[in-house]
Length: 214
Image (cartoon, rainbow, N blue to C red; front, side, top):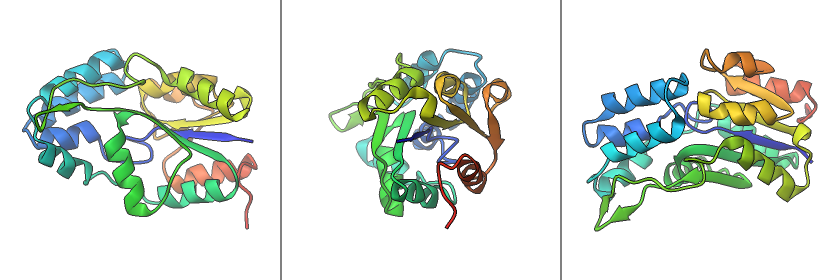
């Protein structure tokens, strides 16, 4: 049994959820700047996520829903996930992003994954509170991947991690195969292989016999 764990924002999707949310409240530029600093490992991920969530305080539930509906999978992502599922591979999304955006994007494409580990933006009285909750704020993706591997009875060396940013480094470093998806400069040296498309990722999985050609 093999586990393939994907990052979401910047990997399975070229959307950045906090930026889409920030556009609804005119803080998108500030969001993007914080995100870029975090992905380049200039500030801690937990700090960056809390800073971005705080900027969203007061955003209405309707506007948040509208932003999440804009989240889309990258071309070829749904097909790759479906092919992995059909092959009996355990699929997972480990993201510091938000479960509603992930779920919306997957539902639109009619595809599912076996496990989603993500964060949440709590609401009160129909508005975002400016807080953020979830296992991947202080928690890191290596722990999430290790827990998942234990749950499904897969050795960690048989896992695959696919990601692009600094918060993906922990899972890329412990996975048996680390695939960088157009990775940031600080991340690339820690990747076993680098791809720039879902087709490229599929080719790697074929080469590693995680997928089999028809």
